[in-house]
Image (cartoon, rainbow, N blue to C red; front, side):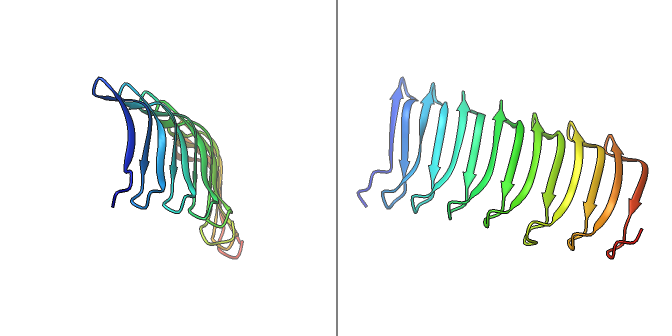
Length: 174
């Protein structure tokens, strides 16, 4: 259709420097930079309507640094960071209506610390609140029914129940 599809700089046969790709309608799809044939620096992607889709940081072709993604309506979808290709640090994930869906911390791609998640399409009702150590349940944990009523409460050690756990029915009775 005569529209520019991509604009890429090469050096010795490898991508080197700024690069841009475009949708068939001519709208910018992605822009970033390459070093020795690998993505390096911030890469920004857009939806076909021009709305920001995501911003991700790369180092030597591997995600490393802050990362954000957005819904097509412009609402923040996910915010976090990567280190050497793994999620690392605080992460927040949102539903398309802006309500928090998940909040937690990762350490080298594994849950680490307090994790909170909600039921989708529930108005933000808590599903789980639990503590993890290197990807395993380890510490206090609470799980909830979709109604918001507490379902289970207790401690975990190395992904196994540990100590007294309390289980509740859907009307809140032990």
